[in-house]
Amino acid sequence: MDFFESLFGLSPDGGDGTTEALWVGAIAAAALAVFFRRRIITWFAVRQR
Image 1 (cartoon, helix red, strand yellow):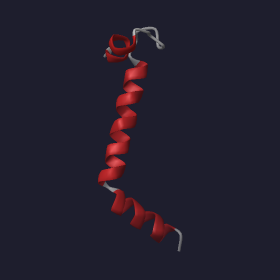
Image 2 (image 1 turned 135 degrees about the vertical axis):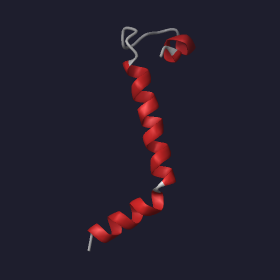
Image 3 (image 1 turned 180 degrees about the vertical axis):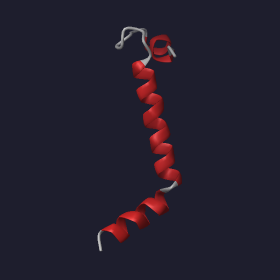
């Protein structure tokens, strides 16, 4: 995974792919939060009672 190096021309992680893995993980987590937002809201509402 070297799309960050390809796009920006710098390698903040030394080329080992950590930065790209974090970006992919953050995007996946955000997508899951949007997809399951109603369950998340309900879960937090029930826990606060």
